[in-house]
Length: 129
Image (tube, rainbow, N blue to C red; front, side, top):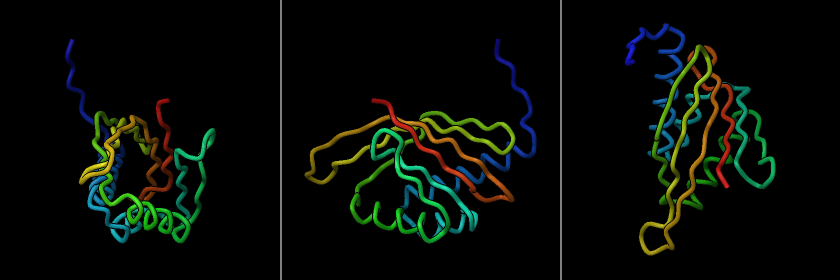
C-alpha cells in the first residue's frame, strides 16, 4: 500500500535544513556548513572507535570540517535515504574516497540530526563495520 501522507511543517523545515547542510558538505564549504549550525552545535565523528570523537561549539566543529576537507579533498557523500520526524532527521549515506589515483574505498553510515531554529544543533554519525 502506497500512502502519500502530507509532511508536517516542522519536518519539512528539518528536511530543508539538512539538505542544504549536506549540499554544503558536498561542496566542502566550511563557511556554508557552519552558517547552518547553531552556536552550541555538537558533532560526533565516526572515529576513533568505539565511540568517535565529540566536538562542541562553532570553533571546534568548524575546525574539524576544515581539517577533514583539507585531508580528504576527494571526499564524496551520497545520500541513500533520508527521513524526518519533527526536529529529527536520519540520513543513510555512502562515503567514497580515493579518486584521482588514490586507492578507492567506501563505507556506509547513518547521521542522526537535530534541527533547532532552522539550524543544525546536533549531528551524530555512525558507520557499519
